[in-house]
Image (cartoon, rainbow, N blue to C red):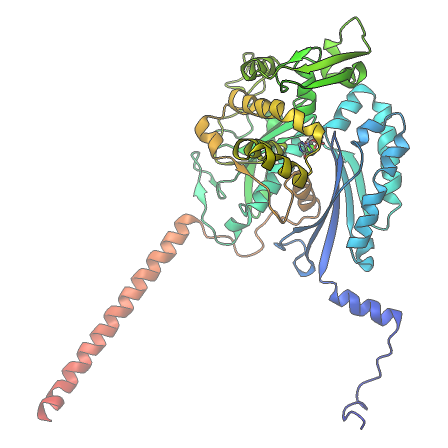
Amino acid sequence: PKHPYSHRLPPVIVTPESLTSLSLVTCLTKYGIVLDAGSSHTSLYIYQWPAEKDNNTGRVEQKHHCQVAGKGISSYTATPYKAGESLISCLKEAKENIPQKMHPETPLYLGATAGMRLLKLENSSASDEVFKAVEKTLRGFPFSYQGARLLAGQEEGAFGWVTVNYLDDRLTQVSMGGFKYTSVHGNESGLETTGALDLGGASTQISFVSDEYNGSESPDNAVSFRLYGYDYTLYTHSFLCYGKDQALRLSGPTAIMDPCFHKGYNETKHYAAVYDSPCVSDQKPQIVSETFIHLGGGNFTQCQEVIKSVFNFTSCRYSRCSFNGIFQPPLQGQFGTFVLFIYTQRFLIISIHFSPSQRLQIKKEHDIPLKYLAEYCFSGTYILTLMMEGYNFTSETYSSIKYIQKVSCDAGWTLGYMLNLTNMIPAEAPDSPPLTYTSYVSVVTVMAILLFVIFILILYSLCALLIQIMPILGNI
Ligand SMILES: O=c1[nH]cnc2c1ncn2[C@@H]1O[C@H](COP(=O)(O)OP(=O)(O)O)[C@@H](O)[C@H]1O
Ligand SMILES: [Ca+2]
């Protein structure tokens, strides 16, 4: 039998156009792609968010992570085209992970960090060639290419801070009516935010909001944000050459017996591999010996002495410094760390809490590359020195550090970078201006007074009623 209403509805003919429009309607998710071109490797991240909340508080989540095979793009100076080619496999994965109809409107960003900063210092034309090759590859994919650029250290630190506070819900809570607090200077600001600590291979960043810092002293370290209706003046600094890999070079590449490596460690190091960085150009020995044996000595206290030697804790022309004469205001609030801090902390916990056979099992499970295993003692000692002697953490503040490893999202600068460029964190609060703490208290007080008055009125009318009906009740 014919459907009673079939005469009213035009027959839906399934055509490619109708399918496309149907699928567009169903495409309630938007995507963004960011490539993190680090000194040691490149990672591709795909982020997604609800389309109807574009430019608003739509919760951005990480949908996919692809680690590019091979080293960082800065290692392809001799064959720049390979820097572009190295990205192809992860970009193809991105095509498979994003609905095809969304490709043209999916922004594609590449940000390069300390590895390319060092290459630019050393050989800027080689750096340009690498970026050209990378751009050519990225433009060859059907996404909305938004540029491949070198991030300044301050940017890397600031966007890492945005990521940490976005993942920690520190930025949106205020606009959702969360409490505000007035800082020591009496200026209103949002919730206490979380500082960010990022340790990479060629640089390390520290970023945090301090009530003692408004950008007047050492303005180069100030980055201002207006997020969800609140102004933040961030202190941020990126120490180039103080990432783990470069610090390893700084800490005495010619040391035959390196106390930061375990007893029995034995590696032949090639001259170029140790001295091919501008971080140690002033340490190059006159006699160029092609290779030298690098042995482990395994003495912790000596290791800490070797590592302390790469820092200058004394020179400071400001009111206070961290190290190497860099201004740093007093630490404030909690800190979140990611990347290498987490790898190292995880390894040291495994080493302390598990038996050798369990460790072997975990090493297989976590597939901890052998290369990293030997360096963990150095990394652990380096992090301790950087934090306690460099940034002036105390054992108390150090113990409050959070290791940001959200299942939903790898922490790092890439999420903050994309949130900023896609305006996913509006400068103004999307809803009504958040209640300030004071107004919140006054609202509650007024409500309490109102309720009390209503209660009295009800009591009064009940009494009046009782007085009216008492005589009647008495007669009955
Ligand atoms: O699984 C791991 N275990 C230990 N260290 C790792 C692991 N994966 C990466 N790393 C280290 O983390 C650091 C990542 O640095 P990145 O490549 O981001 O450099 P950058 O941020 O200075 O440009 C490198 O030192 C790399 O060796
Ligand atoms: Ca990095």
